[in-house]
Each structure stands twice: as structure tokens, then as C-alpha cells.
Length: 294
Image 1 (cartoon, rainbow, N blue to C red):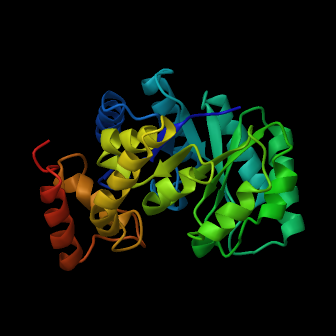
Image 2 (cartoon, rainbow, N blue to C red):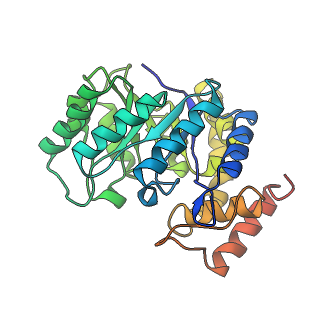
């Protein structure tokens, strides 16, 4: 099963006075859909999921599912470092009507490959929704190898991998272990076209929070055979993508959306507003790309 092809925006979570700002969230979702985004992810890394309570995660997922109302797939981030907690949250997200689940590898306790496989198998056995696994070893300390993917791809509920290792050789190794019915998504905006060239079918993106149409179009250029156009756009977007990752995600992307009038400049600790240097850089890049007049 393929949940989506193209760009899925890993949405920020707007806050107002310490609580989720559902008015801004609704406006952001509607703008993303109007711009032609292919799918939406809530409660992911970019959505500051690690600072959200379980109730907030479920309420936010249900809000998104109800508002989107089937116009694009809504994928809920439900991962954690405890298998039982992840399983329970996944069941609750599934009950809201989410189209799929994005589940990060367990972090901090750093399981073995055997534990990693068992973790995903137990969750996949307990739910009916399609699961995209998420590997980002720079954050978790756990790497999803080609050998682990080769085992897990055979589970009917595990349909893909968000690959954010930053290691193109590893992506190539993973691609060699999968079949056509298992999907690779880039987890790094600046490596999207290279990963498409290895058989990927899309990206779960941060920068598409501010350029949903442009980023989706770049991917579809590639998927529809306009490879040179896609490559040229990937190169052209490099300065903007670099600016969005000047500090730890999602600090800069939320600041960019604030400059565009989409949300408050409010985070949950330990995240905090970006430095003046980062804000100047973001402003320059947003201005250069015509994003301050939206």
C-alpha cells in the first residue's frame, strides 16, 4: 500500500499562551491543501511532539482528521521509546481516523537490531493502519539498517520508511533490500531528489511548511520524468533549506511561519526562539523567495 506520493508536510504545532492554537493550525492546514500538498503529518518532530501530552496528541490528530475530511492523507506521529506506550498511542490515533502512522525508532534506550524489529512487529500486529517507520539516528542514536528493513518490509501493515540518516550510501543499501510495494520517503529536504533517484517516492518535509506547492512540484517533476527540472529546483532551494535548518528543527521553520503571519513565535521549552542572526538569515531567504508578501 502507498499512503502518498509527493510531499507530505510535517506540520508545526502553533501555540498561544502555552496551549495549542487551533485557529492558526486550521488556517495552516487549509493553506497547505489549497497549495496542493500531497499529505500532512501531525505530531512529528517538526510538530514538537515530544512536548505534547498524550491527550494533546490525540486531540490534535482528531482536529486535523476532521478538518481535512479526506482531502489528503493525514498521518499521525505516534512513536516513542516505550513499545507499550507507542502501541497504545497508535491505537488511539487510529481511532481518530488517521490514514496512517509515522513511528520513529525507539530513542535513548538504544535497543539492539533484534529489539528494533520486535518493537515494530508488535505495534504493527496490534493496529490496522499502514505504518511508515522513521529513522533519524542523529536524534535517536538508533539506526535502521537495510537488514532490519528487509525483515520488517514483509509485514503487511509496514508500508514504508522515512529515511533521515543523511547517508546516501545507506539509502542505496536499503533500496537493495526492498521490493516495489515498500516505499522510501526522504526525511531530509536537501536530499529529496537524490533519494528519488534511488527509488524513493516522496519526502516528509519541513521546508514545505512554507513552500508546499513548490516542494510538491519539484517531487512530481521527478516522478513524472522531468528529472533535470527536479534537480535544478533541488539546487535552487538549497539556500532556503539551509536557512530553515540553521538551528535545531523546528525552531527556524516556526520563526519563518511567524514572519509570514501564519503563527505566533511561541515554543515549548526546551525549545526557544532563534537567535537574531538566524532571524536575519531567514528574513533574507524568505524575501528572496517572495514569501513575505503572501
